[in-house]
Length: 90
Image 1 (cartoon, rainbow, N blue to C red):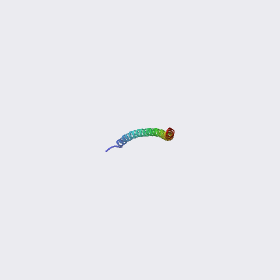
Image 2: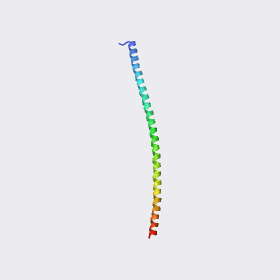
Image 3: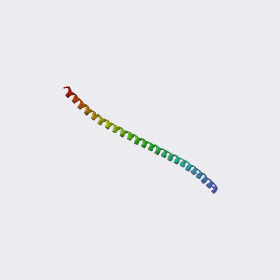
Image 4: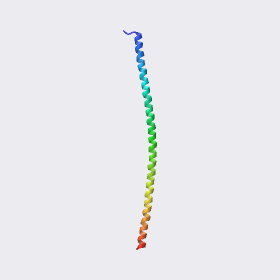
């Protein structure tokens, strides 16, 4: 039969192990929180980059639209000029 002293010593050893495990879990929890913070910062940077690229694409689309309108206007002038040249030449 085990004595009270042995039971107390056994419980003390188990408590020590539990405390060590709690410390390990706390360290893991801290690392997880650091990783989550790091991922949040990366996501924020990615969002800013995506927003910047969207603005650039929007600007490019506007340039393409303006270029198309300019080409349409020039084509109209060239068609008019070609007709004028045919009329005056003939």
